[in-house]
Structure formats: structure tokens, C-alpha cells
Amino acid sequence: MISDAPARQQTSDTAESAAAPSRLSRYARPVLGLLLPVTLALGWELVVWSGWSNGRLVPPPSRIFATITELARSGELVRHITATLWRVSLGFAFGVVAGTLLGAISGYWSLARRLLDPTVQALRAIPSLAWVPLFILWLGIFETSKIALIAVGVFFPVYLGVMGAILSVDRKIVEVGRTFRLSGFAMIRRILLPAVLPAYVVSLRVGLGLGWMFVVAAELIGASEGLGYLLLDGQQLGKPAQILAAIVIFAILGKLTDWLIEIASAPFLRWQDAFSRAKGA
Amino acid sequence: MLALDRVSKTYPNGVEALARFSAEIRQGEIIAIIGGSGCGKSTLLRAIAGLDRASSGTVTLDSEAIASPHAKIGIIFQEPRLLPWLSVADNIGFGLADLPATERRAKVARALERVGLADKAQAWPRELSGGQAQRVAIARALVPQPEVLLLDEPFSALDAFTRRDLQDHLLDLWADTRPTLILVTHDVDEAVVLADRVLVMRPRPGRLFDHIEINLGRPRDRNSPLFETFKRSVLTSLDRSLDRNVPDRDATQGPGQAMWW
Image (cartoon, rainbow over all chains, first blue to last red; front, side, top):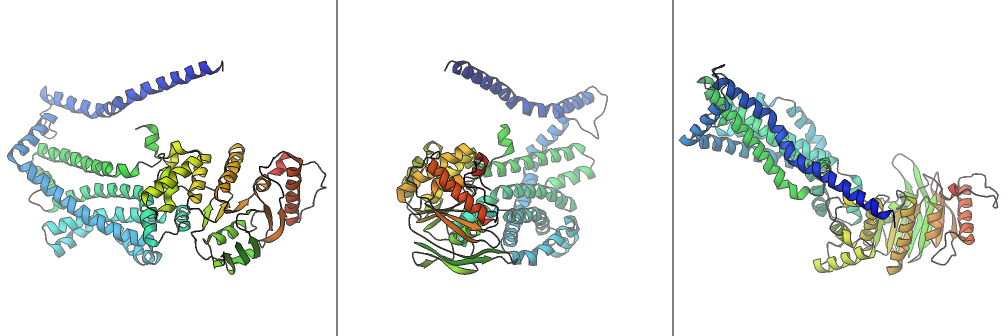
């Protein structure tokens, strides 16, 4: 009883001192991450402003920003972003549907896996850009071939993710489902789907990243609009600010869409015993 | 009544895990199955659960043959095997999906109360200690009110103190509906504390070697001389099942031998 009071005192002390740095780091961490790029940008801005460099090939941030606002004011920017987003969305949708279906089939039925997987793995070994000439011959130079290329890029990580996730579902948990006499469909809905979900979300995010990669490739090859077209146009007309403007917008859109998947899946993954959560990140 | 008639299991690789195991187990009886490793204890349990099919012989519950998991037979594994994406309450209610929601909630609430985890209803399994998780597993198996509950070394992964606690708790829960309990264990102490009858098995191939009635009233005093006597007779039988030299009955036994692997 006597020794109880000081002990409690001590625990409340440590709790407080532990809370203080975590509150600090919540704001300090993003600021730390911004330190390097912001310093570099400001430094370069200063160098150009003071006349040490003309900034023609490497335009300073203010000039990139001016290019973006100019494109936005003329309505060009919206047109290019819409075109690119539309291609990525369609390609992503097709890639995800195909990857999920085939991945689920190969994961669930071992006969289908033996039949299907070697072919898919062989196709995966082909660098996806090698399909471009064929897609153009088959599907023409317009939207269809671009969307097909993006879909191919998205397909493989999703296929592999779904199949791998199903194959690695814990047999012991499946056995719990069996002892409660779950039928095939109930087993999928109540055991397999939730067990597979975390890996599935990861594969969707990887797939989306590849989708953004391939939209650039597709638009560089031949397009009259889209952010990739802005890149190519900037190169051909010698406008580095326009190239960098397109790159910045790619970065923002890529991060934004990835974040959308993350927040959409978060409510379903709260149960995870995740490493990042333990750190309080 | 659960009847096992010459149940045998030979695995595809030719290993004969279980040979002609026969036993009759009355409704409400508590049976402990004990034996050296590889004596087919778990194989037997999985055959009763309907998870694996016996190569020959039959398992019948109230004259109904068991070949696949049955509503009247529940099982608790060595690990809790909770579904990590369901809350504690949803885990307990997992086997009640066919009931209307209100009835299910009431049953789950009662079970949570009964295993002393009412405050953990909305917790995730990852937030539970080992003992708490196993209590949830017990509640999940008991809440559909099985007639037979199988336990495959359910407490072997827990520390000695928690294990004792859960053994008492299990008996307490058993008294509610008095299902048949069939418990596979390595722990002689556990067998004698819980069981009405201890079945000793011998390995290669796994078969029934001996059975020992534990004629002790409940609650049992783990320190009484009679308890010691029963423990010693189980140990002796175990040693014989492995063709070991049987020590003199009166030889002093160290405390380590009570945990028999």
C-alpha cells in the first residue's frame, strides 16, 4: 500500500514524458520531409533571381508555377488532365477486373493455376512496352491501344497479388470455417475475402503506380492531348518549364489517387496488427 | 453417446497414425486422451471433428455417422485461431450466423459475460492476451451449444498460472450445459484435474493402451494425496505404454514429472 503511491506517480510521469515527443513529432515529421525540397527550390529560385544562372534549361519554381497557371487559365490544363485521368481510370479498371478474376481463379483452383499461371508468367517476362507496336497495329493509334497498354501494366501486379494472397491464406483459419460448416460461397465471403484484403489493397496500389507509368509511355508514343503530350510538346518546342509543370502534376495526381485507395480501404483494415500503427504513424 | 468403432487412419505416405481405436463415451462425460508424441491423439480428434476422414472404422454420435464437421460437435484448437478481422463479439458469434441478429447478440453478450470478457466485446483479437484469446475461442465453440466439445491441447501454449485458471474456468462452463468433453493433452495434471476417465494411448501405430477412471469428486484438490495417487497411476500407465522401466510406486517423484511430454 505504501509503495503504491510513488509507483503510480512514476508511471504518470513517464506517460506524460512519452506523450510530449510524440506530439512534437506529429508536426515535426512532415516538416522534416519538406526541408530538403523546399530548400533546394528556394535556393535555385535565388540563384536565378540574382542572375548567376539564366534558368533556361532548369527553370526556377516561380516559372514552373507561372506555366501551370497560364495553362490553367487557357483551359488547356483541364483538357490534358481529363484526358490522362480518363485513360488511367479505364486502363486501371480493365487491368484490375482482369487481374482480380484470373488471380482469384488461379489462386482458388490448383488445376486452373497449373493451366494458366505458366502462360501468364511468361507474358509477364515480356517488357510491357514491347506490346506497343502490336497494340497500335491491332487497335489503332487512338485511345484503345493506350488503354490496353495501361491495362496490361496494371494487370500483372494485381494478378500476382490476388493469387499470392489466396495461396497464403492460413490453413488454420480456413479450418475454423470448416468446423462451422461454411459452404463454398460462405467460406469465400466470410474467410477468404477478408483474409486476402490487405494484400489486395497493396497490389491495387502497385497496379495504380504502374498505370501512371504506362500512361506516360502511351502518351509519349502519340497523342494530341494529355499530360504525356505536354511533356513531348515541351521537349519538341524547347519549353522545359512546361515539361516540369507536367511532371509536377503527375506527381500530385499519382499521390492523390494512391491516397484515395488508402483512405477507401482504411475502414476495412482497421483490424490489422500493423507495424506502422504500433509506431503511431 | 459418442461411439468410436475401430477407427483407423493411414496417411497417404503409408504412416499408420491410428489403428482400430474403439471407445464409447457417454453424454456429458469428460475424457482426457494422453500419450506420447505420434500416438495419434490429434488424428483421432480430427476424425471425431469430421475434419479428416478415417481410413476405416466409424465415428457415430447418437447413431449418426460423422464424416464431415457436424453442428453438434465443436472444437477448440491449441491456438485460439480467432479471425483477426472480427471483433471479439463477432468472433464469438461466428457460428451463429443463421440466427436472427437480436438473438445472436443476446447469446454473444451472455457468453462474453460468462467468460469474463464483457468489457472486451468490441476489442480486436490482436489486443487480447494469450489467455483471453483462448477464452474467446472457448466461448466461440460453446455458444452454439454443441453436444460434444473437442479440445486439442487447448492450454499447452499458456503459462502455468493461466492454464490452471482456464482449467477451472472450463469446468465451470461445462457445468452449464454439460456437453461431452474430449481433451487431448500432454499434461498429466490437467488430465487428472478435468477428466472422469483418462484414455492412455500408445504410439506406432497409435492405439488405445489403457483407461483409468478418476473417481474423484469435484472440485478437485490438486494437493490431496488421492489426487497424487491418480496422477501416479496415469504416469505409470504412460511409462508402460512406452515400454519404459516402471519406477517403484513409492519412489519419490520430482515436480517436473507431473508435466509429462
